[in-house]
Image (cartoon, rainbow, N blue to C red; front, side, top):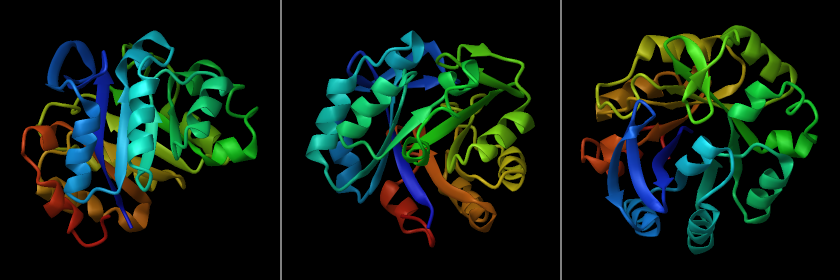
Length: 244
């Protein structure tokens, strides 16, 4: 079953969307992320993808209280959170709060010892963010790219028994231009790790295309701006065979 994740990006305690991860291109959709979560729950969502944009940029969680309020209100939701999580104490903070999965990006790239030194229990509950910008892995709130070989990095994650990846196409993210299916398919077929697709999902047809990758290891789909701009009806997306 492929999980559908409505995205809630939080900046200054408000629900926003960026274009291509550019912090200078911010559209504010609500000053109450809790109400946005309620909107998606009312439409049938069972999962949420929440990003602390301030945390991703600064390296330190900045919107924990907002995220925690969502967790406390919607106890049955599966919630994954990313943004500024760069040490084990922050991991513990989110897990103690009841967050189901924590997304690690920058730390997994900048500190090669971080993942190997995690306990097996923590490894089983983290998702690694592989955000691609111009064929390079991006980090530090997607503001920087590095020279890590994508294939080698994925193999490193496989060796360390990481169970899930979020693959984000930054060049497509927030642009409402559709997905780069070939790139997503190539990535998924070249790893044994379950993969959540993010970036560019614009229409119901995009979701139908991605669902074809179920048997190849696609485990989830993150939908952001397309929901906020009414390009995709969440109820309709959740009714697609194989989605939840």
